[in-house]
Image (cartoon, rainbow, N blue to C red; front, top):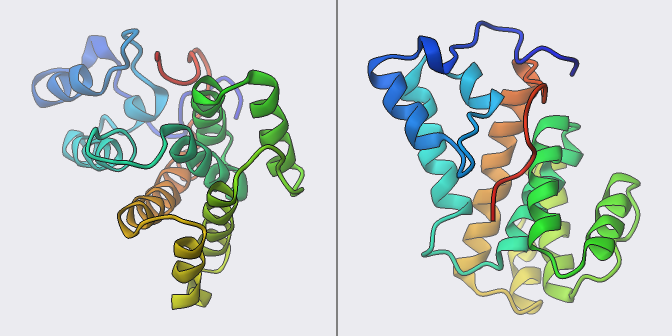
Length: 193
């Protein structure tokens, strides 16, 4: 994706005023970083605000019960499947930060990139990734049995909803990043845990 932030005009902090300044202050990472994705969406603060609020509710809300590393792995896998370097880099880093061991996380991510069976995952995580792959690649072929497989793996319906929403939301984010040519130039990857 090169050194460009985006293929469209971006609005940096020094040029943000009013509503955009307020949204920038809210979406900024714990370390103070304003991600390139947010900068590229600055031409429409109301879109950035709504999209970010939905993203945070789906992936980072305290009311969710899905294991955080699994949510990040699912987000990363959607990025991998959609060949989105931006979301894959950020959420892959988040997954690696939250997972038990860096070497195991790296092996899981390498396997997903290579379209191989990822090691070290329990049946719940494997079922979630299978659901993720089918919904991402062939959404028109989803059937009730796909949800039944998640239940049989021990995933309750509330977490099935969370998995579904992560996959659906990252279909949006990967298309936003890829469609606007959003690059990683100048960014620290992942979030501060």
